[in-house]
Amino acid sequence: MKLVIARTIFLVIFIFSGCSTYTEIENALSQKPINPHNWQKVGKEKENTLYVDIENIKIDNGFVYYWELIDFKEAIYGALSRISKFKVNCDDQEKANLDVISYTGQMGKYIIINEGRYSGTDFFDASLSITMKFACDYVK
Image (cartoon, rainbow, N blue to C red; front, side, top):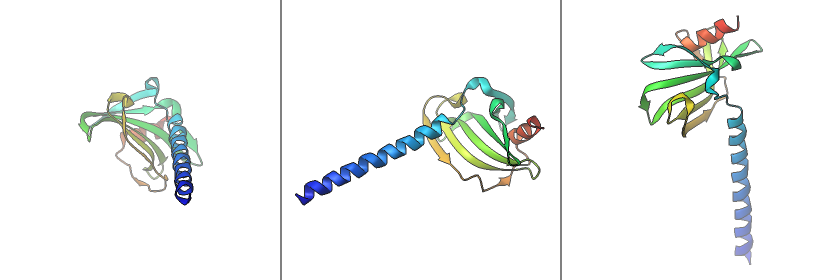
């Protein structure tokens, strides 16, 4: 009898923990703009093509938020493209990652092979970033 109760409790916990994870992923994916019509090509870097989603560049509390798409010339760990969301301090020329998603196809298409969410508090020097400069100039 105790074994049946233990199995039932385990099953219930397993089912609900899976539902919560699915809901978080579903919510995160619904917030990611991946409409290829929003992407504007802003340049090339190391033979990779860089794009910025011009319809989703936002300013909030002095920070600029934008989405970047990189089409890789050659696959990196199976990924041919990566979409990232950044939080930017334009004055200090630094940015922090918020979201990163890698895809098996160009322009953020096909299978997601890697995904990460970040706090947006770890800023790094982006003074050479083509996409950051574009986003900062776009909101001026």
